[in-house]
Length: 125
Image 1: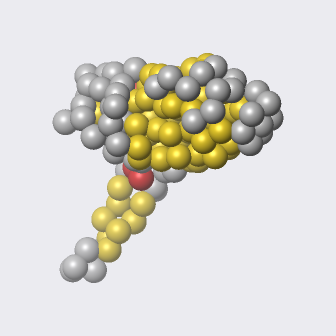
Image 2 (image 1 turned 30 degrees about the vertical axis):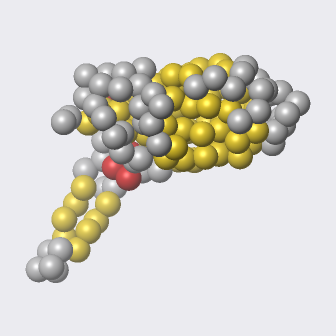
């Protein structure tokens, strides 16, 4: 069971976990400050529930995440040099993608070497 929510009638509503076929992951290497695709566009919404950012370089950076190219920054992860940071949410509590069939992008604020692993769940319109 991934979530229990109480309604106004005090009945339990259970939110089922994401099915395996709806989950996906993508790994991307970034070595500059250019906005780069971290999750390719799908047919439906691809909602982000996990992000691992490994900084293998010698420069600390902030890593900004957007749910579409040029969109608003939805999350920022500060990553010291030689360190790994990120977040993991239950798949049903993911960061929602703003526009279906768009790529998720990431951008470092300082030029360094990053290894990005993004975990997403595919949701219908």
